[in-house]
Length: 66
Image 1 (cartoon, helix red, strand yellow):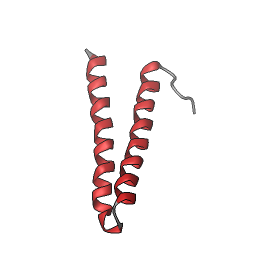
Image 2: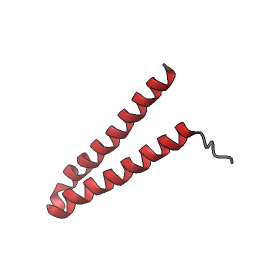
Image 3: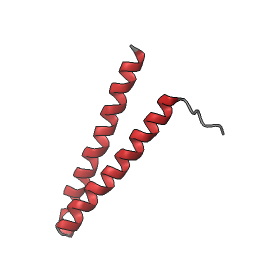
Image 4: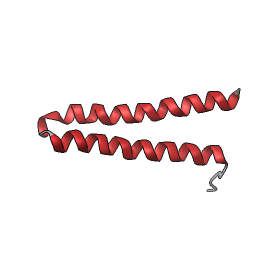
């Protein structure tokens, strides 16, 4: 299996990686600072980070297509 090393694919991979780290950090921040009953809040914070990445990818795709 070959990996396409175009700059756009590299950039999208970078966006996804940063979003996953941000989601994990947001989850842990809410979960550690509060208690076990806030798992839903922690998941919401992580979900917001992932939605931000999806938004960034959509905007960049639209710009690339003209």
